[in-house]
Image (tube, rainbow, N blue to C red; front, side):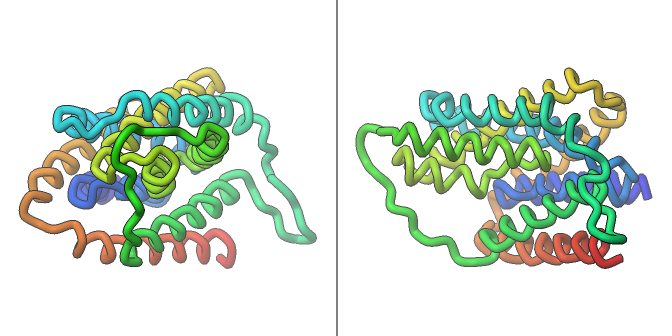
Length: 264
């Protein structure tokens, strides 16, 4: 199963390199179901992997001039505060079991996986449906600070709870709330995800999670190989065709998690 898990980590990285986002949402299911990692601990590993892979992607976009640093700072600060606070202060105090209803006991790991599966469903829908043409502003970038702050706290909180980057929420916000062109929105979102994920991971260090660094780095290395190969292949394979197919796969995985954790 571990060998299959490392192969799956390469496939996860490959999908991330090919479609430019969303592939990292498979990190937690791979860690939980193929490596047997505790779901709460797997969200910590996922933050590190997502942060590392997003940093690699943002560097590539930065060289092309597709990263707007001021926007990354404005959007990133509330997200970073939220994700760090959730990992360091909120996750450790969530009770286990979370609640009991009659004979039904919902444990903390199950609650995390169910919440993650719901996020996977939302992400899969955005990948499957044909994206609407967002109205891009041309000219000086302006900010709706109250909405940006609320959006940053929301996305940071979600990232902190489930260990996923939330790029499908960030990119439309960058276009609609800051008026960035789509290419800059993609590059800037990767930098925001990298910063909030890696800094959020440091919250786990302060929360006392027992992290297996050698495994985490080994897993990340396989994912990085997949990303590099996927990025190369993306020059020849249009992601418009791949993204819906990957979206259906993510949806099937989300349904599997919900059925397994709730019904079985």
